[in-house]
Length: 335
Image (spheres, one colour):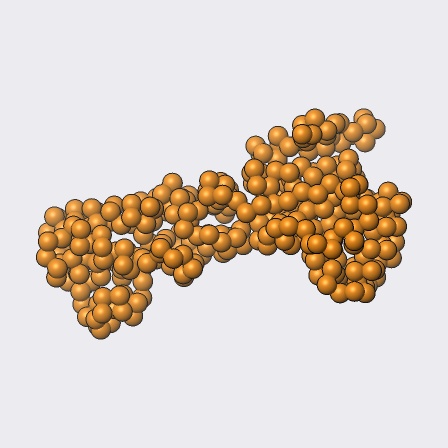
């Protein structure tokens, strides 16, 4: 298969600019452009296609994939890189629907990048306008990059896009768990967060969401701190992000806390107090949720947590029980 390594060559010396190589995308960090994109098996074909387009080496590209996994980010990166590489270029990402009906539908030879192409496909007039515009651009050889949402191309896509065989079509697939770990790690580093391997595994394994949701979750953590390494910090993070796990069928933080507390304490009363302390003081769940999970009144939940807190001050052994229960809880959450 042709890769960016074999196809991207240096531009003539008179341009005094060298195109970005895929190796630089993979191994360098920056806050702008392609360097902020985590290149993975699920998206490497799309990254290469966008990179070739941005370097002026592949004029007709179609990208597609599920929402939230970086298509728009990739389009913005391609536009930014093209502007840097070709001084005077005014390439920007445009809405396909707005472009075919508005000012931007005027034919221009400059590269065109259209997002949300799927919005035009269900509207007869816009579909025809897009078809005519793309036919003209294809005949003239004017570079065009299209993006649409969908795991597969629509059935009528070949009727809208002229001479589809002349376009490079690449997809961004739903990333696997190992890939999501890389994504979470990259996002965390970009935001200045330090996550333990355990917390990263929990987020990647239990949060089956898209990139935008991961970004929201990490921003929520950032509001409370930058380091999330110890067992207590992992539990605190899980408490903060508990609403994000609501769609996970095997996730019940309060139930997991009760289970871990009972595994460490022989006395049911002491186990309940330890569980309440973990819920209210470590995970920082609200009293109503804690009380509901224990089937008690909120005032009783607060009293139970306070009782264990008092024992911590006078009995060092209680700290060991807390640490053991915390370790058991973290292991249980990671499974």
